[in-house]
Every structure is written in structure tokens, then in C-alpha cells.
Length: 169
Image (cartoon, rainbow, N blue to C red; front, top):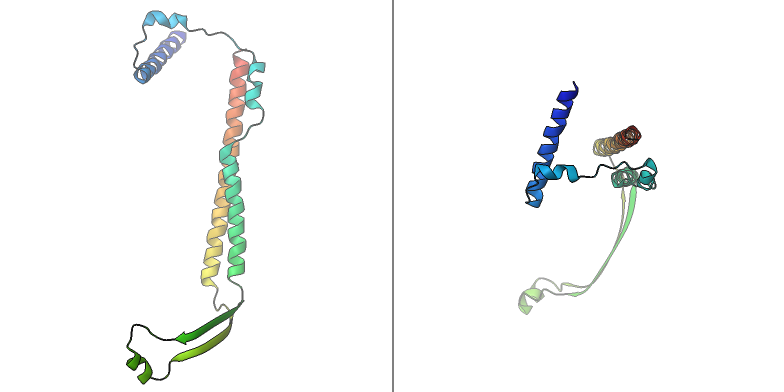
């Protein structure tokens, strides 16, 4: 009934006032409750709040989706065949920690060495890469779902806010 609603609202107001008093550390007397100005504000005053909605969480999820797509592409290229070229060169390779007699007694050592390596690798078995790909796809789907849920929640909040503004007209 109406009296119950008034009583609930008074209790809610008192709870919030106590929280405010604790925050500012000042006691607010009941006589000052009437000094609060509850003037009506036109809906047009709230329009700037709705213009240029930038929801940082949505932007973050969009960037996370792009990152997941890049990770999926990267995992595909990492699992492919690869060709590597390696070059190395050593000149006057002598172990300075050993004595000169020890270095000379076991051969002349490597005085001049050049190495060229060409490595072609073919992945055998794809269980690990398939699992990684499935994991990345699941992460991408999870972030897309989170993004859709967040958009839906924000649309509901905007709709409720508009209805509350219309109701106080």
C-alpha cells in the first residue's frame, strides 16, 4: 500500500543518509531534510549525457577480439613449414682459461671456422596446434559473447534511464 511505500522510502533515505554521514563525518539533522531541492529538470538537459556514448569496456572487448583474431592467424603461420638460414664464424678460438701448453697439446684448436646451416622443418603431427587453435577460437567466441552481452546490458540501462526520465516529466 501507499503507507508501506512511504515507510520503505523513508527507511531507504535514512540508510543512505547514514552512509553519507559516515563518509563526510557530519551528522545531518532531520530538520535539514526539507532543505533538499527536488526541482524537476527537463529531459533536454540530459541530452548531452546521451551524445557521443563511448563505453570503454566495449572498446576494450573490440580490441581483445582483434587480438584474438591476430593470435589465430599467428598460430596458423607458426604451424606451417619453415626454412631457416643460419651463419656463424669463429676466428682464433682459444680458451683463455686453460694454460697455453694444454691448448697446444690437444690439437691446434679452431683458428678459423665458418658454418652455414640451412634448416627446413616440416611439422609432423598437429595435435598441439589443433588444441591451440581450438583454445584461441574459444577465447575469441567468449570475448564476442561478452561484447554482445555488455551491449545488451548497456542498451537496457539506457532504455530504463530514458523511461525514468520520462516518468518524472
